[in-house]
Image: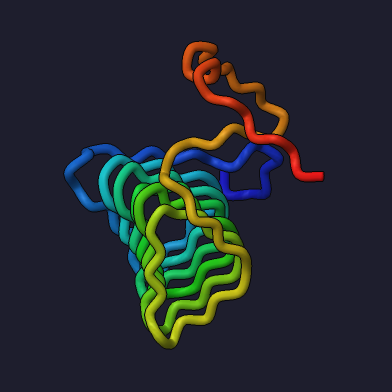
Amino acid sequence: MFGKSNDAAPRVIAGDHHAQSILQEGVVVRGELEAKGDVRLDGRLEGKIIVSDRLTIGTTGSLIAEVEANEVVVMGKFEGSIRARNRLELKKGARVVGDISTANLIIEEGVYFEGNSKMSDGRERPKEGEILSIDKKASASKELPKAMP
């Protein structure tokens, strides 16, 4: 029951959209966490976290993860990738190492950030190699720009 397992990491799904889920200091989660509503993390998470609304990483929080949320506020330590569809705030004392993508980025004085940042409009982007359909009516009325020599 508590021994080492070769099974895939567990996946936890939190419920009520209006509630805030809190992982307090001392709690360690390894695997995937998915939550509707807001999540505050003051403990440690290693893996992946998907939050429908706001993820707050408190001053004692520590994540080594892939994060997807509408808004992310970091006050603690983070390593990995953050995709905040609407807004990402890095508060004084935060330590972030990794790649971030968001529509709105706020970095306070006293933040340590090492990595890459990408500003987006919050919409999904096609993955590399993915083919997009072209609206012929819209594109027929516009001339394509000529390539630079």
